[in-house]
Image 1 (cartoon, rainbow, N blue to C red):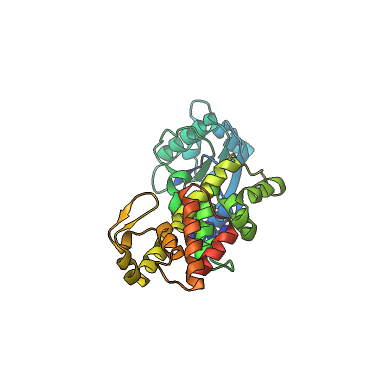
Image 2 (image 1 turned 60 degrees about the vertical axis):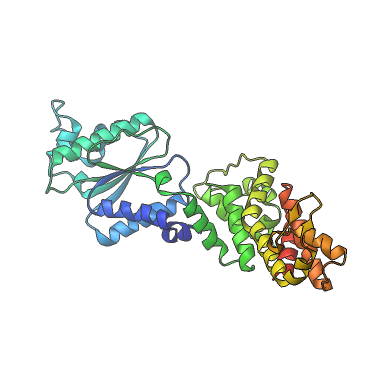
Length: 354
């Protein structure tokens, strides 16, 4: 699932590709996301390995939860005799930028910041370091990872990559479509499964994947499957899943998924039925429906009226055609009254149509 997301979903792949290109061009970046990044470890390893394959001269180092970047880097990336050369008359950024004999310049530094204050400290340091270092010199490359909601104030020399700005509903649809493509179901059930996952689960790609792993149960009881995942599984980063929709919320989203995928099939069935029986329908025109609506054209006659006509001998149908008409009429009535079909009813409906 993680490979599908990071390597085959267009904007997710573009997100990592553009970061890799920037790193290979020795441009420092901020990696930002307001929530959980799907399959975080896979993404990090994919970026690192892709960069290493094209540039093995720099080594990756990881830094986490450091509030004073200059002081930390001086301690970790300078020998004792080099540290002794530092004087407070210079900033740490100036000291490193003006020193060609430090290993810092030979590193990719993946920095995880955990507060807005750390974000400001690191971006300010990196921007000053890049400015002081100048062009045509080997330079350290920073990946500053910020998983928070604080608005980032742009700093010169540091490019901002927002996961949330890259990814949209289209990408979630693509992921669910690709993930559902291998299930052993008819294409229309796959289409409904995709819409159901996108509608019910929403932005949480890893939760979507977990639900699609149990797709048969999810098709039947989405809410119960999600609760099972919450109780028995965790994210790839070891954290718990969360889901704050109620059963009623989910039921409404199931209905919306069926309005998008099942309802159009009912209309296609009605149009095909009218076309096949147009001669008999024309003989009955004008037709008054049970609600008092008068139909002047065969193409306007609704399923309920067609069923009434069949019941009263105005349409001569085989038993198979009559049962099919009844199932489609019943399904349309349910959806029109904000009720949704269970998966058994959907399967039977599709059998009656195709």
